[in-house]
Image 1: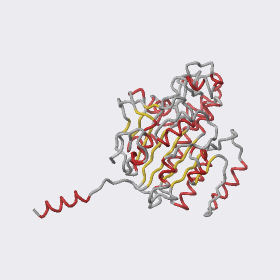
Image 2: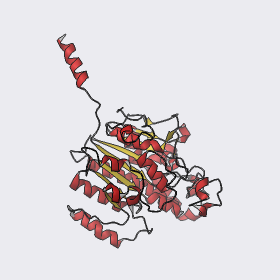
Image 3: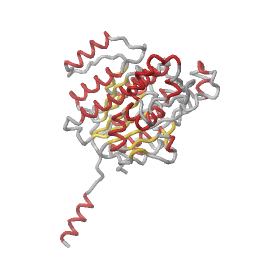
Length: 373
């Protein structure tokens, strides 16, 4: 009887464990095809890539798709997929798609961070988001004030997260580190960023975004960190498949470095969940791989792609991976019902032990990959 009472008391006082910290990473426009198959032969075989083909094959080839993908993104497949869950391999009938009708970046990021598509967001122009993201909402909740931060390579993120209204600490584009506890490395990154040219006018190299994030984490210990990498999308738009592939590999290395750094800090070790996804997919073949747009988008904002009146087939296809103490060890998910990008926000909140309905009633339901309910 005595032991029965003890057991009952334990059950009554028990609560669902949720890690205190969350890292959300987005990799702009990285296709599921490379993530689950490795580099795509028909694209790499294009004549324009002849000079780089041999080197890329030596670095990232394999006897089958599993070897190729593991060579391309080793941390994703050796750690995350083995300890957590990864969704989106359409070869295994694991489908995940956007719900917005445009299939490009700002609508996709809004969907990730708010749990719903918004037809008002119909361009990539840096207009302040009228919607409150989960980052802004979390920053208003007890225990999270001043503990939610965002770092992005694209200079539109201050608008996407609406910095003026949300008051979040956001470092994006070519912004320098300006926080008060500026480490020696942060100051060095500030200087280096002005000395190394970016290939693009509005997107910096991901190494700077990652570097600033790591230095800020060391100084301020935020609880929720959003890291938005961008190189893959921009190299793709340039039609530079070799550098797009290398960008995917660099993204994997940066995520691994961030994760290993967190495990060296007591606040984060075994107390952090990691969630990775993308804002949109890309075309499926050698003709369309570098593009992304829906039929609606090519009639409007992306009318430069109007030679594809049906839009870019495959650009609505996305994927997601997660790992951490509150993520089920599902491995590579197969034969799941259709999942959607609008489910990411509720999933992120659930990984913090928060019911997504307390944020908003009309968002996508959390994906069934977490222990928390």
